[in-house]
Image (cartoon, rainbow, N blue to C red):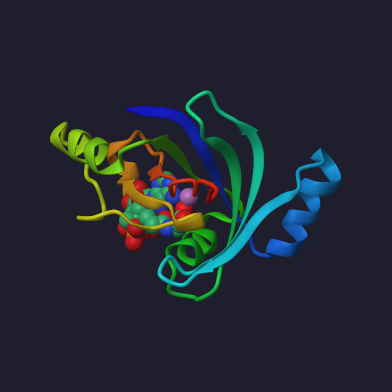
Length: 146
Ligand code: CMX
Ligand code: CO
């Protein structure tokens, strides 16, 4: 079951400048940054709020790190802007299978590694009324040792 907006993915040319815009304009701080080589992006997660399912909602700012990445291709065609939305679920495998059964193309056979060790997959935008849609299961929160 999809229980939150996990993040909104925003493609940009200059991650540092875009982070600075969100900080000075809205007061949003960087929660996490990483390079995801497989996805071809350098990214910053700005946490906006916690959600009732125990997760959180973020903005995910994305800068391509190589010319053949999906985000580089999208930026060249569209310029900066909203690239995808992501829904959070406790079980991305089950939800992806369920949605695939409804005739929507799920892009990966198995979920891949996403931000902060989450597991992610994508639905084809042409099957989702023009919206590239990601499904995310966050990494389990490690419980403190006793
Ligand atoms: N939103 C809406 N539509 C999109 C889109 C997007 N982000 N990206 C592509 N499209 C549309 C294009 O406009 C195009 O439509 P037309 O044929 O009408 O022009 C069509 O989809 C095909 O686009 P394309 O430019 O030829 O791109 P590809 O088919 O090579 O790739 C996609 C599209 C969705 C398969 C690819 O972007 C993909 O695999 N995305 C998933 C991975 C990803 O986006 N990773 C980066 C984020 C990582 C993260 O969130 O952690
Ligand atoms: Co994303």
